[in-house]
Length: 99
Image 1 (cartoon, rainbow, N blue to C red):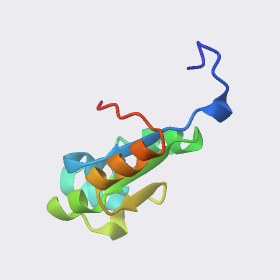
Image 2 (cartoon, rainbow, N blue to C red; image 1 turned 90 degrees about the vertical axis):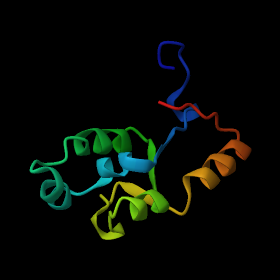
Image 3 (cartoon, rainbow, N blue to C red; image 1 turned 120 degrees about the horizontal axis):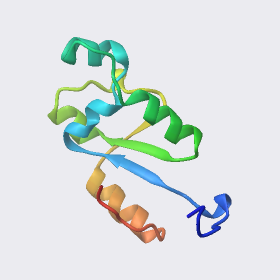
Image 4 (cartoon, rainbow, N blue to C red; image 1 turned 135 degrees about the vertical axis):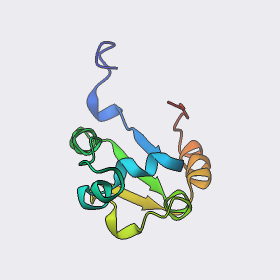
């Protein structure tokens, strides 16, 4: 978008984590207990947040994977349902891109 000279105030990005990608939102303490290492995704999560990206995690995915809400990094918003959010943001004009 920058290459096409789209002004940054015209760019709104929402990253919606679902399924096992919920581990990317975990604080280091929890992640370390699960994988014996700090969460390598947190620097990316923090950089995206700083760049203005809204990062959300589906609470149903958290529950399915046994990830308690309390360990989600503060830069990530817990949302009720990824499926519902895709519809809600679609109605607001957002485009869905699965990555």
